[in-house]
Image 1 (tube, rainbow, N blue to C red):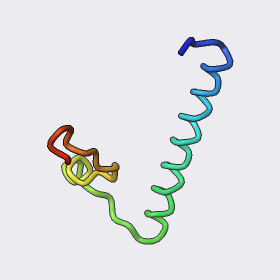
Image 2: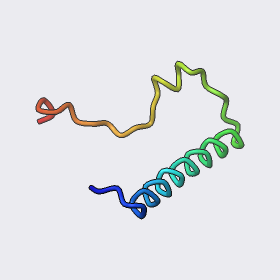
Image 3: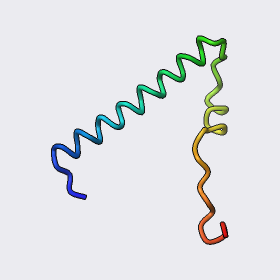
Length: 58
């Protein structure tokens, strides 16, 4: 993919929107009584999609 000015702007807009959505979810969590988590908890309890283990996934 060639990085044209339009493609760069679209990528920046996409990433900014993702950051805003994440910030909105965090603010909502704290507003609803959520407690701050330690750095260790945040590192070990990530909410990311699980990726199959390559060839062993079948």
